Amino acid sequence: MTAEIATLEKVQAAVEQLHRDGKKATANTVIAVIGGGSKPTVLKHLRALREAPKPSADQLPSAVLDLARPVIGQIYDQGIKAEELRHRDQTERYHRLLGDLEAQVEELTETVQAQEARLAEVTANLDEARSALGDATRTMAEQKKEIDRLQAALASQNVQAVDHLAGLLQGVEEKVATIAGKLDKAASRTSRRAQGSAGKKE
Image 1 (cartoon, rainbow, N blue to C red):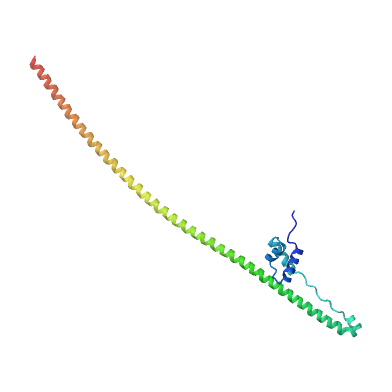
Image 2 (tube, rainbow, N blue to C red; image 1 turned 90 degrees about the vertical axis):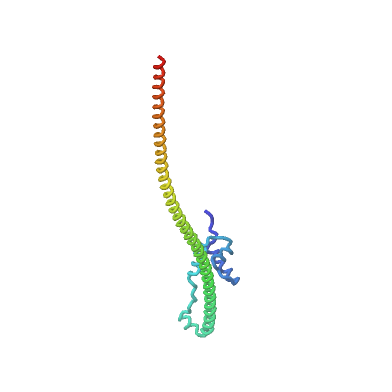
């Protein structure tokens, strides 16, 4: 099992380095500083760092104040200064975190916009494909109608041709029968003449 590249400690160190450099700590900039790591893992660590409990300033107990009244002013002044320093540090930290969040939101917005553009492109391609499919379907339907019409016309022409050919054959047969009848009659006359000529010679 390979070791995790973007550990919480590395992410925290990278965030501190980016803040020292005056840069915003986003998932992409942290990954660039670390030199690798999974973006979901880095985002998880960034969220954990933002949600980590803040150290609270210690409050002076009343007994100490009662026993140390001579120096209470000095302690109080030092506490005020420390509180101001802590407040300033927290404010700066909040501002850095806010800057980081804004940068991350900007990155996510760019990602969403890119995905929306890709989705729009895919939708346009799908609409174009559907339109082309509709055109092809209509063309096929028209071609089928034309094929059916041509087949019907061809069938009608075939019937007419068969009828015409049958009529021609019938006419030929009638002419052949007529010629055969004439030939038979001619043959009969020729035979009778031949028999008559033979009888005269006898």
